[in-house]
Amino acid sequence: MSIRVTNIQRMCFDDGPGIRSTVFLKGCSIHCPWCSNPETISFEKQKISEGVEYGRDYEPGELTDILEKDRKFWGRDGGVTFSGGEALMQGRQLLEVWKYLKETGVGLAVETALFVPEELLENALPYIDFYYVDVKLLDQALCASVLGGDVDRYLKNVQRLAAEGKDVHFRVPCSVEYVLQDQNRKLLLDFFKAYWQYPIELFPLHDLARSKYQGLGLEMPDFEQAGEPYLAHFREELLIRGCQVEIISI
Image 1 (cartoon, helix red, strand yellow):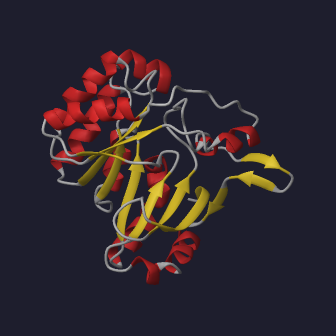
Image 2 (cartoon, rainbow, N blue to C red):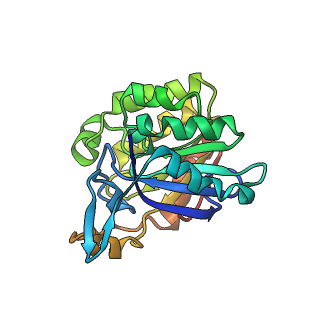
Image 3 (cartoon, rainbow, N blue to C red):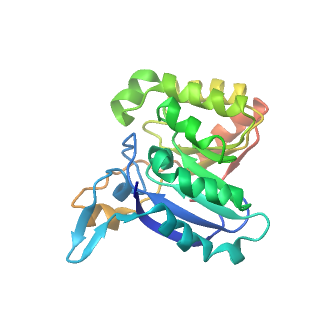
C-alpha cells in the first residue's frame, strides 16, 4: 500500500521533541477554512504547473529508506513527525513504517486534528507516543457546518489518548470569527479545565499559505487577526483554570 506525501521537511524544531524530520501526508478528514496547508486537504494529486503537482506516492520501504538518511541528525530526543492534512488518515499504509522506526528506537510523533474513526487512532497507539492535537470547534453544530467534523468522535479520541497515558500537547488556532467566539470559547475553557495537565499552545492565524491557495486556483479566506489582546485574555482565562499555556508563532 503506497503512502501519498506532499513534502518531507528536515531539521524541524517545532514539530515535537528535539530535531525532527516531518512527513506531510495528503488527505484530511475535515476542511478548516483557515488551513495553512490547503494542498493536503484532498487525497488526490493536484497539478499546479507543468511538471509540478502536490502529491507523490512512496512505498513503505522507500519512505523508510529516505527517513533513515536523517537518523544522525535526530539525536537521542528527536525523531520523525507525521503531519498533514490528517496524519492518521493513512495509518494503515504507514503501519510498516511506524513499526520499523519504533523497533529501531526512533521517537514518533503526529500532528492531528483527531477527527478520525476509532480504528485509525487504534492503529497508531502502539507506535506513536507524542501527539500534537488541534483543538478548534467544540460546538457540535458549528463544527459540523464549518469543519465537517463530529465533536463526539473527537472527544472520544481525546479520552482514548488520555487513558493510554500518551504525551499530548494541545494546539489552538485562534480565529476570532470561529474558535474564540463566545459560545465556542466557553466550551474550550470547560474542555481544557478537564485536561489541565496537558500543555496548551495558542497561536494566531496567518496568511503565509496565500501562494499555495493561488497555485491551487483557490481564494484564501481573510480572517480577523487574533492580536495580542485576544490571545492574552484567553491565556489568562486558561491560567485561572490551572492550565499550562503559552502563546506561540507557527
